[in-house]
Length: 374
Image 1 (cartoon, rainbow, N blue to C red):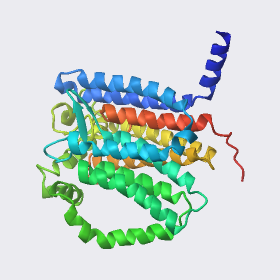
Image 2 (spheres, rainbow, N blue to C red):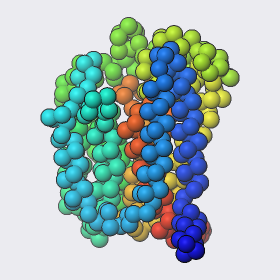
Image 3 (cartoon, helix red, strand yellow):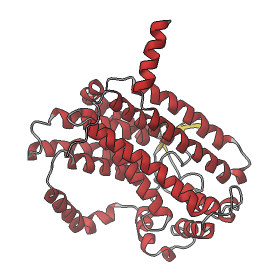
Image 4 (cartoon, helix red, strand yellow):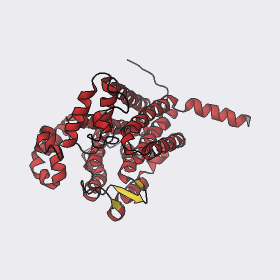
């Protein structure tokens, strides 16, 4: 018993408790916002699901902290096949919204999971393992080509099978950031950007009408004020009406009377802006930015290991989702169905975020002390 308590004490001391505390605070804040946003639904289901997912997430955080991250990344080929199977299962079992035409969900009665969400974790792990395996040959053209193929298959499957552009863009951003940290020169990214810009007229017809309109209304929501532009318009109204301190929880007009669509999921930030004002929005941003900075610090501590790439991948995922979600709520970026980490409603999203944080904790537990030298 004494040995058990001693080992438990050592584990707790090594565990990234600071990151866990930040994650719990952000998640609890999100549950409070969801409680307010779903008050008009007259159902406690949303709060219950989010709370259960958060509790399961905490358990996963602790369990994942115990794994050998190097060994997991070393098995990247097996995980890659698993990810392809997971995404491919949507071809048979996938369901989704009629308005979007996507097939991003697999449902078991009232329970639904999003393979694309869990696939983010697998994508980061497999790419980290592959990069680390080829570290001696990077940044050669051959190795870069293999990594591009590595990323292209799951990204292409997400676009073609689930038609989930938002998730595909998260994957793409993770890949680009991780590729940058392999030492690839900036000119390669500039050249690729120029090629994408030149190819845009060719790529544009590949998007369906729904996706095209989502992009166009960013520049002019009035193109479809009662349709695709409605969400952006109502989101800006909600944020603007909140002022500095907001109208108070459970008291927002846009939120409580149903004018703000997806108020507990994609537009939870707008709901927070209306009811808690600019102060509430700033608090959300500070929490997420603190978590991102912490992830980057752990990446720095883990330099020279596959865990460093895992931390960079997780950081990239958080950065993209945070910037895109806030940007679309402000009407500055396309509305593409990206959740706000820790805050938006969604069991799969919450579990994925806590699993990602568990990977960071795992990297921290096995990293050397941070020595700052100039």
